[in-house]
Length: 164
Length: 170
Picture 1: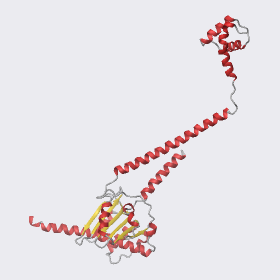
Picture 2 (picture 1 turned 30 degrees about the vertical axis):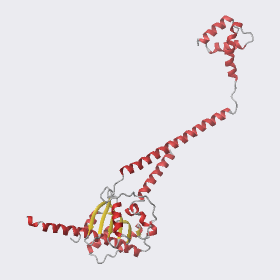
Picture 3 (picture 1 turned 90 degrees about the vertical axis):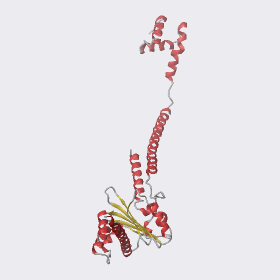
Picture 4 (picture 1 turned 30 degrees about the horizontal axis):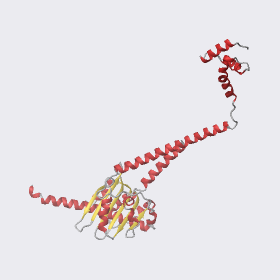
């Protein structure tokens, strides 16, 4: 009986650790780029997220700065992956890799100067965004920004609509 | 108790009909152990003496230990079989899970590349100071904010332009 319980617990822990290991798109889909010398990788762990109050968002409108600080408050991790080598190729590759059943496209922007941006969100069953992912690609650079945490869609909408 | 030939014959008859009592069977065995068995009844002598000789066989002293050892071994084997059965169930569930994952794995927007489980050591890429953390957070939030707003502005402008283009139809 003890053996049975032990095995069940081990199976559960293995399953949970497997899921935990992939809670962000960069790790899930772009892990082969992380050790690539052409890419710059930056990670901010949860211990730094209590610094949101110190964010200097001067130059922004007060309301916008306030909303951004409010969004940052609920974040846990931030990952950034950038490169200036073959940015267009990586942008197309990134778009192809993202699983659209996991990630909902919030916005696709293609400007006249061919700067492409895609903003995606992974939500839980309560419609709370658990990851906000930004993919941008232009002639000069490619960037992936992944915010992990609890991101309220209301707050994101406020940000979009605040200067209308 | 001295018995004559007829009585013995009657007892033998009842013995083979399975009608004799334990005492009567004892009498029969005692009769055939004697030296003076009737000539006509000697054909039964070997039969009754066989059971007597078998009854005298004693089990070797180490036999009990051996039997216990065998029983213990079988019990251990059964325990091993139970563990194997449990492990095979766990393996079956695992294989079923993998199968379901491949069956229902979600599709991508285009070229599908399998998500890979990894254990990346993110601490290697972690910012070293609070200042750096704040700088990166600001940059990331500003970029996201700008792009979100740019997207909605382009959409709004396009909707206005389209409305103006088709206004003559009204």
